[in-house]
Length: 505
Image 1 (cartoon, helix red, strand yellow):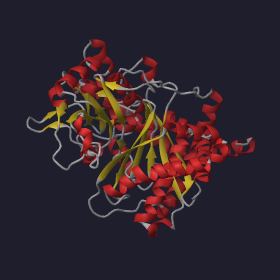
Image 2: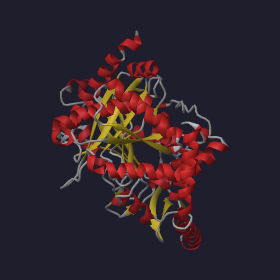
Image 3: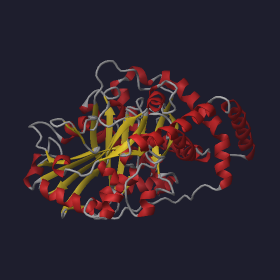
Image 4: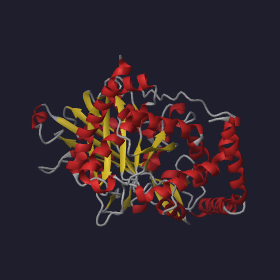
């Protein structure tokens, strides 16, 4: 960005700040005062409630076990060997709950969300019944792990219905002899176990889910983040420019809504899930020779694969698609989990980039995605979301957050999302058994109701596992999603590798 452009954006941002001072500021000042009043009343009348801070605010839209709180992240472990449910309960207890220090560090495992006087709080239970939270599940004949996980991730109920007792917002299923796919029943000969660990996204984020996986596998996550905290000059520049860039992006996305490949869906909307594994070294090699970001490579592959699928199942819509918007989560240098050596929080930021849907050349698409990635970072989007907007969100009542997420004016009108996570490169083991695949899917219909696909690539044990959650508003059925994940993703990676072959040489 040139100096002239920076001055221009600063000037336009300051101009927009002036009317905001008489409109948005008074509203958020009222919310700020109201929040502190509610917190004081809570300490008097509901002293067991824990106020929500900046590290939880963006994922705390409403009480647990309600549609407004339907936002879950999950670990899916595919393990070579049989794991007994009681053995896993003991392992989980010694990883997270055995000592007083552990119980303080992982206090979110004791919590669920409630709403009081319009604001969302956490409530802590005194003890955890691991026999309730960690259960064995035998799938009916003909039902795959994907069939179960896809629906279970958007089931917002975590409650003991028989006794009506509210439970902390997480649950684990231990699934014995779970086949990897219907075409390979021979996998059952040695015995396989799939473990599915589902958590409300308000009690954990990407760093947390990686840390929890590392604890269970006895591995230390690398927590790589090369960029330092922005300097004071850049912080002030981002703050002053924020109104212009935010308004610019919202206007772009609002105008583009008629050209979006996500259309209004009539009937019941179901969420599905599919898995695949990409060659990690190929992705790294493409990143090196093109001098692009790792996440840019993955987003360009995702868009190319999705374009192939849409031309197949919705050919009438693809000709009119303009820009497409992709959101992705990002790390932050002051994240408390790596700084404190573990724990649980929701302390994130994210970025939104655009790319032209009509681009067919895989290398051209990658360079376009990476250019937009760098442009949004230069404009301070991650800082704007993390340090400004999330601080505003924590003062909002729950009803207002739900209104913003669902309205047509929502800044989160992105069609797809991608969150790339990095675990240890060493081979993972769970209770002495080889972990053959580790997927960390996420689905957030309450937070991002316009987003119909969430992709999570996970680097671990020297491989790259991909999970994709998608709505039937985007893909027709499980077979379509499996083609996207297990065929078109691999084809797009190979096409990009071939396109970059001249650069390899």
